[in-house]
Image (cartoon, rainbow, N blue to C red; front, top):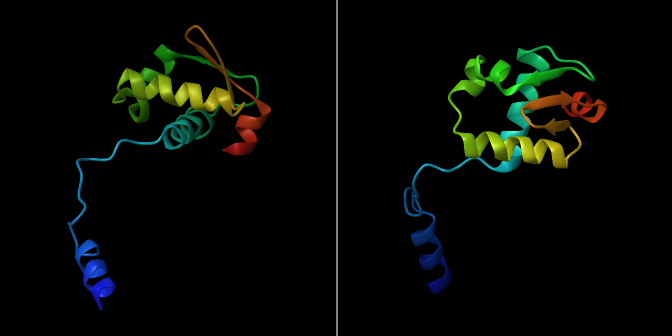
Length: 97
């Protein structure tokens, strides 16, 4: 009976609320990939600069740490090649989109 009481307490709505959740690197990387493929209509080998992406409303409101995290995750998955301020879409990136 004690187990049920403990579970009821932890399952109550709002019981474990925290502040706004921060997006995961995977979510940010996928969002960046979606912007490149769908909003910017990039294809394999297409390149975009950071300035090109800032013009896009989906990216324009990101904080720089989030953008860097998205680039790092996408590059680690082989979706993008990141050199200086240029992003290049790879075959794996187009396939993952």
